[in-house]
Image (tube, rainbow, N blue to C red):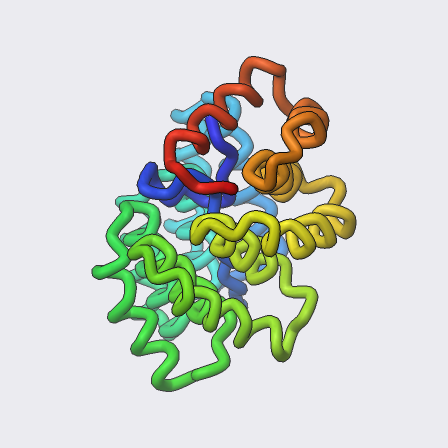
Length: 249
């Protein structure tokens, strides 16, 4: 399978990276304790221990009923686990507890994960009307535009972020993928290559690099890059999948 940062469904052949939402402490909440417990619960879910994992996350919610920090962190954890109904419920709760922009961006991310950019955009516009420089909202608007095939518009959002934050990981990743999606993998290559050199521990960035190398015609290097994390069969499956899209040279 093609690697993803955040689940955005099958409409796109390559992964898009959405910035995780920051959280701030609220009443009845100890930020460090909440994050630690959520990390443990999420690890349990990742290991298939669903009963204990969900029980621990439910306990965090019960013990922090008025904490916007807990609501956002729980929502992010559920989102990473692709439990979109639970994630959306927690983002809506966060809005009610005062985490307005983070909750709205979160609901938009859920809709993007459902391959529904049309539903995501109104939430993002609300955030950007109040805070035009909101990086998470700008990045998500770029993803929404790419999902709709509006790649030039998408790149404007990513470039807005990069104008003030040239090393922003999510924007650089998404700009590279947007260029590749619009049939410009060679133009994408310098961005993703530099990003990969600065994030050599990031498996998803590395696999994005492999895909763009493949689309640029550098098939041998693409296979070497992909094989750092994948078997040869998995890498070939990824390359075959992206070849079906007609994107490339």
